[in-house]
Length: 155
Image (cartoon, rainbow, N blue to C red; front, side):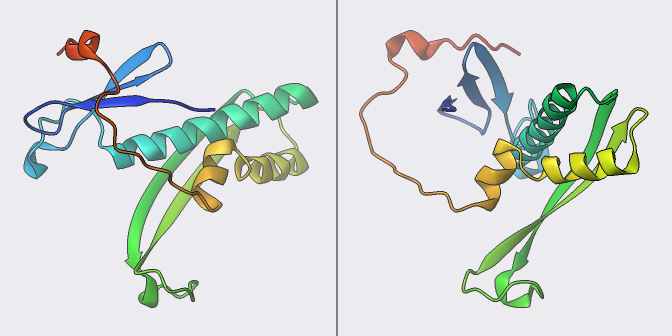
């Protein structure tokens, strides 16, 4: 199970995220009212997807004892009107197209590269984005407690 806590201060968009033993920052660009001290949440999502693909491919290659020396991935996401997207016939107002370009480094056969490409589409983050997800939300009085007033991440 993946967990995170998020704290947005009283001003601006700079947000502290804590996942496991790690703290990091999300923000918005200056031209969108942020301070640009971290990637946007959408950029983090693309980074999380790319990292998950790379790690999943490495795990698979190691299990198969294939000579995968590295993985490079470029990702981008774009939102379209649902009714204007040729490959979509549902009722949603918007759809998102995620484009991935992947390079597998190492002395791999064409069959191994094709199998790794297939495995790339099966990483946990890809499945979370692609498969139905259900959100359960509750309003509570406190999550982080008074001890969290001072985040570990500093400028």
